[in-house]
Amino acid sequence: MAELRIDDERVHVDLTTIQQLGAVCRPFSVARSSITGVDVVDAPFERLRGFRVPGTGWPRVIALGTWRGRGTKDFVSIHRGERAILVDLEGERFDRLLVGVDAPETLAAQLT
Image (tube, rainbow, N blue to C red; front, side):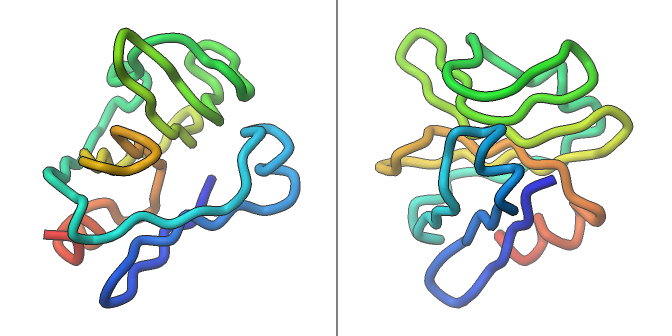
């Protein structure tokens, strides 16, 4: 899973080399000021929207990369059996981040 690191100004999405290859994406960050909403998600595969372009996916097993829908672009890094955090963004490269994490409530509290 991708790792989210939070500092005073930004949320950093860190990816290993293998994850970068699977996601077809380099590590990136978004401004904390661009966050418009945060939600803890117990069933993250149900929150996918659009189609994977580009990235890696196997239904209900792994979703890694960019998901594009009508006017939407999300970064996704989720695996079967994990909970996730959903971060809504405004004015960034992605409209949402959907990332599997070990303690989503703790991370959500840090972001709000």
